[in-house]
Image 1: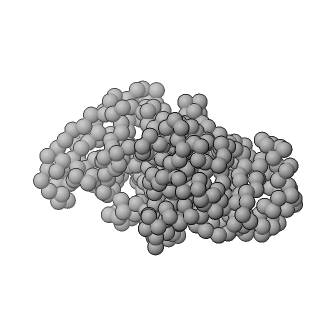
Image 2 (image 1 turned 90 degrees about the vertical axis):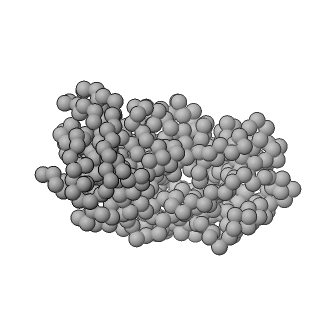
Image 3 (image 1 turned 180 degrees about the vertical axis):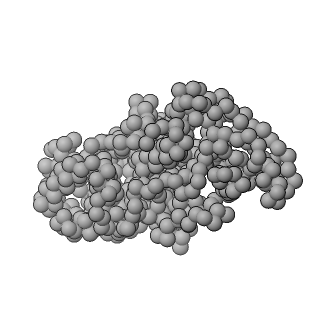
Length: 478
């Protein structure tokens, strides 16, 4: 067993560049309190960030901007956390249904959109109801389509006017006002605004249900307003190289020796023998890492309590609400064997079946598939533990055959099924989307479970955790 201590020179001021991280291994044969005390007496410095998802990467980016030495530990073989893309038979398969909204304010500050080569969806949706498809369109982007849709059965003319009024209302509020506003479940907000049952059931439930992975729309109205505002200001997109290009871009701007992959942290403890107790990190292989400035935990909510279990002074932070789950199925097809070429999202407004939404990813970004091939992405809400992968494939094929015809859908080939138990934190009221990231001496949390369950929430949470640490250590002013 070894103890690893980070030993670069600590910058005297934010303008001084830090040296590359250097690791010193100290042999040890046991983890008795006396031995642990001796191990933790070695020189230590920098910040340890646990988890290289979006929140952890944003934390590291903010620390790096101040030239603060850090080490980013990731248990898996790549950065991204839940935001990953796999390559299967030449297709880019995002791990679950994920769309990037360009108006996310934190993302605008942090990401290079041009380098991501973002490809736009149609600003609206095509809804399957009563045996046929009906279009709902953004009038600012597709005016004539929206005019033609005024009299379709996806809500009344009044419903569509209410959408415009809701848009104006959310645009008049700052993000901070939205996150601190009084809250109700989204379904109650829609009813209070005056939307009819038809547009709630045929549009809002499949559309926002697919964003929140919550078909009942119990999610807080704060999150609904924030997403609605971002949709009004920006576009739904996919990066040409897959959703995983977002964390990859963040990681590429960090020092090459600052990220350790395949490095699993099993616990975080406190060295109480110092005047100010400081956290240390124990790895799966038994190694111990000590940091002088602090530890930032940037893992998914279900794993937070596991890591912090031995620190009795910290109350459990895990939510008692069940996490949001989803299943995403991918199919390949010949480009001639799909019904449309438009980059449009299809919604199930029928109230029947298991499919919530689907789209042809290669219509949005042709780079998602090999030449001449189409990639079909289908999303279900929930885990469907009572069905095997094979049964789910059969059920989805049967259902979509009713949408597009059996001869066409029957030719599609199943590529992969992703069952994602923890797709998002459950953010039903009551919520606190402005949580303090500091939970102990030198110990901080970040992740979308502390803010909004969005890409932007994860990025903002990472920055805020880093800034809390920097303020505590007097590297930046309050």
